[in-house]
Image (cartoon, rainbow, N blue to C red; front, side):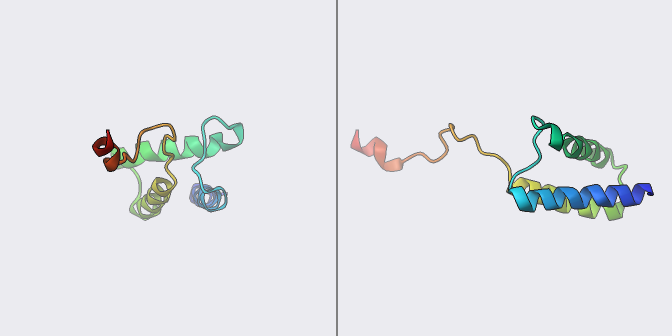
Length: 88
């Protein structure tokens, strides 16, 4: 298997994972670690500008898909109620 084929297979695996589980791979699950490390490595390549242009397009699609499933801190005060201050 060539490097191009392995990259493509991992890309498809992560896209499938995102569509099935509706979340990004977690570094806390051992079965997700390969995907997390692959994403981290490719993030570094993209930042250096060392990624080929055809891969860069697919990687950018993957980044936008990952942003869609970004976790939100459920305990954070996200949506303040503007009417609450008026009542007090």
